[in-house]
Amino acid sequence: MGKNQQNKKRKRNNNGTTAQTHPVAVTTTQLQLPSPPSEPAYASLIDGDDLECTVNVLETLVEFPEELGDKKYKDLKRRVHELYRVLAEGAGIGASLTSKISAALQDYRFTDALIYLFEMYERRLPPKLGALQRWVRECDATSAADGSHGDPEAMRCLDMILRIANMSTEKAAGAGGEKVLGTSGVAELDPAMDAKGKGKEVIKKMEVFRAREPVEGEIRIWEMMQKGTLFDTPPPTPYPNFRPVHHVLAADRKPPNLYDSTVYASSPSAISLTPASQRLRQPPRKVDVPGVPGAFVVLDVFTPEECLQIVRAAEAIGFEKDEAASGSAVMKNSILARNFVWLADEDFLAHFYNQILPFVPASAPINVDGNGGGKVRGINARFRVYQYTENQLYRPHIDGAWPAAGLHPETGEYMHDSSPAHDPLWSRYTLLVYLNGEGDIPDDTGCTTFFLPSDKMGVMEARSVRPVQGAVLCFPHGDTTGSLLHEGSAVGPNGGKLVIRTDLLYEAQGYGQFKPPASVGVVQGGKGEEGIGG
Ligand SMILES: O=C(O)CCC(=O)C(=O)O
Ligand SMILES: [Fe+2]
Image 1: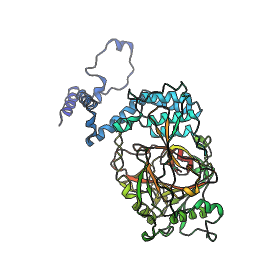
Image 2: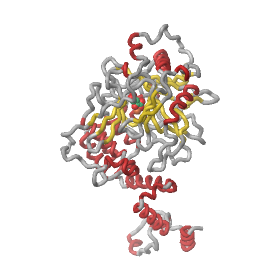
Image 3: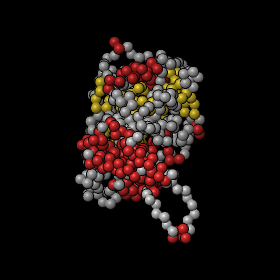
Image 4: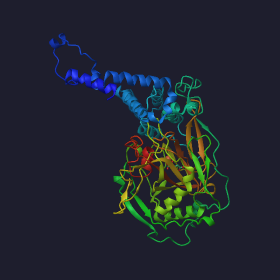
């Protein structure tokens, strides 16, 4: 028995009971006859020596933070993180600020929101991922097809939200994260800005990133769709090797939608994969996205012919419209793409996974709260194939984590979360497969654009990635360290963009109590939910 446990036992034996008290009515007379407790009230739950010992440990770690790199502190770090949140929320500061920020954003009171956000940032109060995602959605700071960005005040709020989201990584990342810090350890407001944050450019547009220059052999799928040449002969109905496995009525979607949603499962021969010997450009290779930590493109994962087959299936079966019917998801001015929800078959998934496996992180990063660390295990079978036409976009958001969708092995029933309880899988990275590229999308439009805090408070860097046919863009999402704020930027005149969104799955078992927040990953879906859990 350890010293502290012995102590605890000794104290209990002395009293005969624990010091736990029950609420009793107290009269003035009783108050005049105090019997001072021999120990402070916390003795009932935490032993005085235990407490002292804990304080000592924490003091030492504050003095020697490099020690925290050791794996043995995983549990401690997680608990401290939870304690900090409880403290902040218990004092009512975090909770009330969170709701004030939400209310201000909902009412377009961006200046008020900015003040509360700055307070949250200065106090270093850690918000929950769900709150961050909601705020980002409420800013609705969408840019336009001409490249102009959203309301400058909304963009400034986004900038502050990003800095709040990055607080824990700044501390954890040391030098790597320091670029957003001012001399006091907290980024400072730019003196050139007035109280409303006006008088400065909000977005610093960086050069568009091309993972590769245009090459021979690209298939202009959008052009074919426009010209009516996607199919040589009218496609058969029902479309071969695809079958509906799940249908949700518009009103039952979360949040309610104006349109129903159907999931179509493919069978193994649905997409015929190009034999290795006939692949013109291989093998796949990885290119990091400059200035966007954690984001990279894997080129030539799919051939142009494979991309074409996917779009043919989606078009023949039908892209569905997607518009939230009520609630805050009825967004202010965003125009959303249409989508086709495809539950990919094992063969296709295995091919996709093998193509990207050499380039993806073998294990998920461990967050400051101790979550993460699970091994990479596969790709989420639930694909959302999106089709954006001119001016359509996907407003800025942070993607949420998702479970592994699949079919029940015996009943064949669609399961939103198909991984067994003893071996849970959750996503950690977003995968975006570009089905078309340069030839179909007018110059520098229709990119996936990341927003990052610059070294000036109130100014964000916009870093756009140009779609390249058959390439896959990968980046961290959910509560993974370094989750990235991004948008599907508006497509220019006469253009069309086709892209698949899915996720990279990691083991969640045994790595903290990782579970996505309630608003994330538990919704069934289309784009309406994406602002929350996309
Ligand atoms: O279309 C894009 O470039 C981005 C799509 C996206 O962010 C998503 O599906 O989560
Ligand atoms: Fe996204």
